[in-house]
Amino acid sequence: MARGLFITFEGGEGSGKSTQVARLAERLRHGGIETVVTREPGGTPLGESVRALVLDSSPEPVTELLLFAAARAEHVGKLIRPALDHGTWVVCDRFIDSTRVYQGLLGGVPRDLIGAIESHSVAPTVPDLTFVMDLPAEVGLKRAEARGALSRFDAQSTDYHRRLREGFREIARAEPARCLLINADRDPDTIAGEIWRTVSERFLVKAP
Image (cartoon, rainbow, N blue to C red; front, side):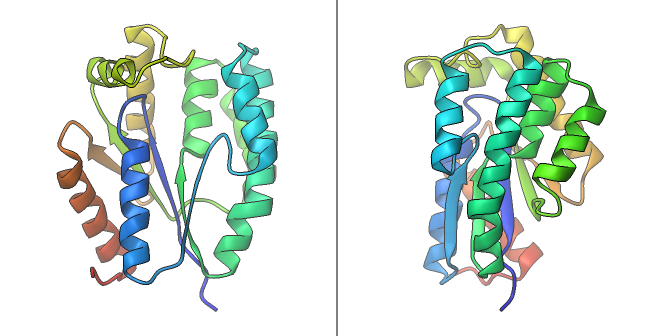
């Protein structure tokens, strides 16, 4: 049985990740491809508990890193890797790149520590393709505000969100074979079309 493919979506707040995760999964399933949708932090009971804990408190960056790493190890071991081994595609809202930007670039956790933890909690299960949803910070913040209650990440300063955006853009530039920067300041249908064309061309999926 062929291994499934692992696709992740990254980006700042309000960039439309969740919308495009759902749209891509729907298209894949319509084309007869078994697909699992998941998110980080989350994806397992332990991961969802960590999500609630971190969003409701303000741990130190290293504490936050270790909590997310524990949730990710559980996520990979219990859901992502078994699904891929079964031939199922996995589409995930956030993964390792969010840790690299939020806890690394913005939280000041050393890159070598993040890399060492990744090697034990994730490897060799890394994304086959990552869509980086790129949106001006001001636009993303307005979208987040329109959704209602802001998380503690949403409520950070505009400068924080500008640095966040640049952090994701830097990852996309550094890993062009894995990452594709998507202009998220367009209508959802146009974005979904570009994402589907990319998946189709890269992985030989015939559009239904």
